[in-house]
Image 1: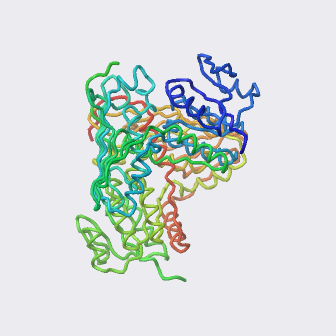
Image 2: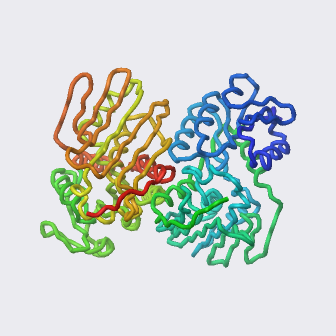
Image 3: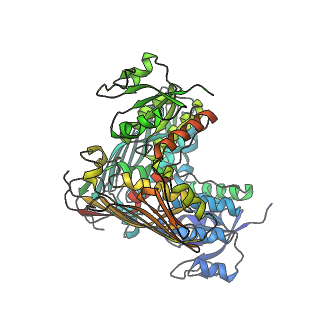
Length: 308
Length: 308
C-alpha cells in the first residue's frame, strides 16, 4: 500500500465543506495535510494559511492541492502549484478560459505532475451504466433539461454572474460534462442566451446542437425555475428511450430504473488517486469548449433584472 | 513530379477571386478543376455547380476542395467533402465553433485525408523571420493594434455581423494567428467587447492577455478607424524592440527593416500541397480559441448603432 497522498484544500467554501472534506476523509489513499483560506479557516488543528504561496513557503509536506476557488483565480494558483511540483485537482470548470487550461495541461506535462480537470457529474451513479447502454445503439435525438432555482443553489455568489463565472452554464456545464461523456461528439448549430439587464452572465439558454451522426441535441437551461427542479437528459435510440434524472443519479431504460446513493465526489477522489499513482493527467475541456462556443455563436437577448 | 492536385473552389466571393484563383494558377502542384457557387459562376469554361453535392454527384475528377464560404456554413461542406475522400482547405476562421473544427479534424484523420485550417497572415513575409528573431530572446511585453475601416474592407458583408461571423475579430483573428505563432502561449485575463446596439458582433475590443512567462500582451481592435489603418504588432524583448507592420509584411528589428511582396496565399497553397503530399493535417485552433475565450470572458459594452 502506497503512502497516502497528502492533499491541501485551497478555497474553503461550500463545495470544500460539503464534498471535498468528507471525500478525503473517506478515502484511505488521501490524507488532509493543510487548508488555505482567505479567512484563515482551519480544520482539525491542521496547518492553515491565507494564501497558497504561504503554504508553499512554509515547507508543509504536501503532495497535491485541490483548488476549490472560483474559476477566475484558478490559473495562477494551479500554475504556482504545478511549478512547486504538486499534483492538482481542479474543481469545475477547470478555468475561466480554454487557453489557460491548455497551458496548465502543458505545464503539468512538462513538470511530470498530475492535473485533473474534474467533472463531478460524470461520476453520478447512472452515468457509466448509461454510457454502456448507449454503446452500439443508434442515437436519433437527445434532450437536456436543466432548470433550477439560482436563489436556492447559488445564494449571493456574485462571482458566478461575472464574466468567467458562466452564469447558468455553471450548472449547465454539469449537463454538458455528462452529455459529452455518453453521446457521440456534438457541436452548436444555433443558440439563444438570455441575460438579465443588470448582469454579465446568462440566466437562461436555449441551444441546438447536432451530433456527428446528424442527431439533434436540444438543451434547455434555466435558472428561474421555482417549484420542482429538473436535471434530466433523455436520449432516443433505436433500442428505446434512455432517461437520466436528478443530475445523472437515476437511470431509466426499457429494462427498468436504477438509483444509487450519491458517490460523485468519492468517485472523483478515487479517479484522482488513480491518476497520481499512474503518473498521468485527465484534462478534458470538451464541456467548457461547448460553453465557449455558445458564448461565441449564440444570439443574446436581454431579459429582466435579476436580484438575489 | 506528382500529378497536379485537382482542386475545386467552393464559394466564389471576393477572397476566391482576389487570392485563391491566382494562387492556384501560379502553383504547378495544383490544377483548378471546377467551381461551386450559388450564382452558378464558371471560370475558364471549367465544370461549375450550384452546390458541392452536385459536384460530388457529377463525378468530376477532384482531389481537393477549397472552402471560401462564410464560416457559419463551413462544417457541412467540409464534412461532406471529407466523407467523399477529398482533401479540404478551410478559409479562416476554420468554423463557427471550436467543437465543429475538432470534429472535422477527427473525421479527416479517420478518412485519411488532409485538412488544412489556413491562417493566411502567418504567411506574411515578416512573420517567419520575426519568429526566428524572437526565438531565444526574453519577451517582456507585446502590443497588438489592429484598427481598420470596416466600410472599406467588408462592405455590406452582413454575415460578418451575425453570431459566428466574429465581427471585428474577423480581422482580429489574423493578428492572433500571427501572435500565437511568434509568442509563447498566452491567455486572456480580462477584456472589453464593444457591440453596436443594432448588431450581434463586436465592432471593437480591448483585451489584456498574459504569456506563460508572465509578459503582458495588449490587443486593441477597432473597426471604426478612418484615415491611416493599423495592422501592427510590437514586441519588447531583452534584445530590443521588434515591430511587425502592415499585417506582418514589414518587419523591423534593431538590425533594420525588411519588406517583401505579399506572398500569403501562394504560401498557403504551397503548405497545402506539402500536407497533401505528406498525407498529414494542419488544424491549429489556437487563434479561434482565444476569440471564443474573449466572448466567454469579456465584458460587453453597448455602443452606437452601426450602418453600412
